[in-house]
Amino acid sequence: MKMFILVISTYIASLFHADGIAEYHYFMENDHVVLKFEMDKNELQHYRIDKDCQKNKLFDLCIKNYLLKNADLQINNQKVSFDFIGSSTYNDHIIFNFKSKKTYNDITDLQIKNTCFYEVNKKFKNRIRIDLNQFQKSFLLTKGKGSIQL
Image (cartoon, rainbow, N blue to C red; front, side, top):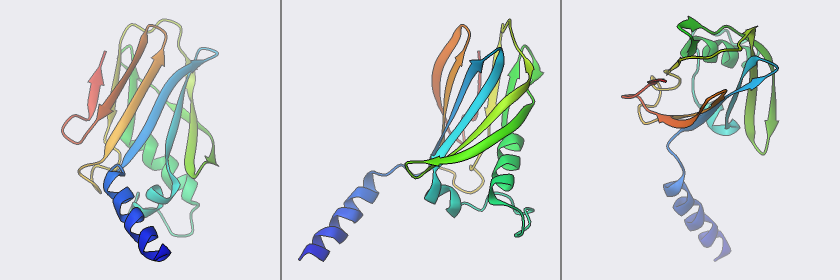
């Protein structure tokens, strides 16, 4: 009977689980833009991120390359280049941290384009949190709406 209840509760919980979501938090630290990417570790491992990624490469390097290629931030009409700081795991979520190569004092406009995971899951959602000077907003990007401009 206990096994039956466990199976049923697992099934019901799966009905309410998001179909795929990742979070991107952009914030300032010492005039650098920091990007913190977070996603459920088990869910991330199910996606085939980079078809060109060799099997002998580290998983983190493949994810890092994929994120830098598919998550684009522009500040004042210039693309922001990021350095990979590192990755960690917390509460079964994988976290990747990036820091801008340049510093930014005066931000007048920004644009974010994010196409991560849409080619694998058309219902995937990218939650974007922005805390960059006067820009403090949160957005949910989907395949049909993969960019924002402020």
